[in-house]
Amino acid sequence: MKITVNSVVSLKYKLSDQETGEQIEETTNENPLVFLYGVGGMLPDFELNIEGKTSGDLFDF
Image (cartoon, rainbow, N blue to C red; front, side):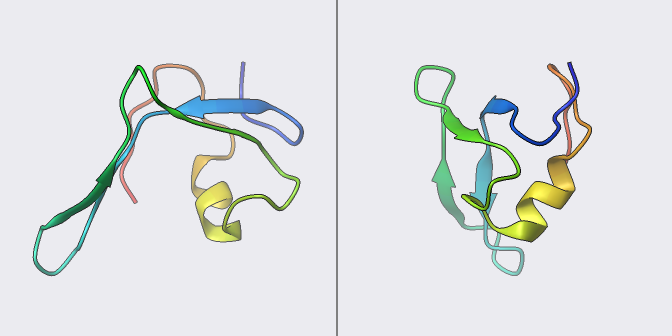
């Protein structure tokens, strides 16, 4: 199922400083980020980068 407006999204991520490589934040399989896509709850650029992704997709941005 592709991520579209009103999809419940659950994902795992690592957030790092691009210049230093320092890890800032990380979620796990046990505690993923879960949110409703396309209703303004996340940063617009974050949502644009995951739109259309499907379960199991790996990506960087």
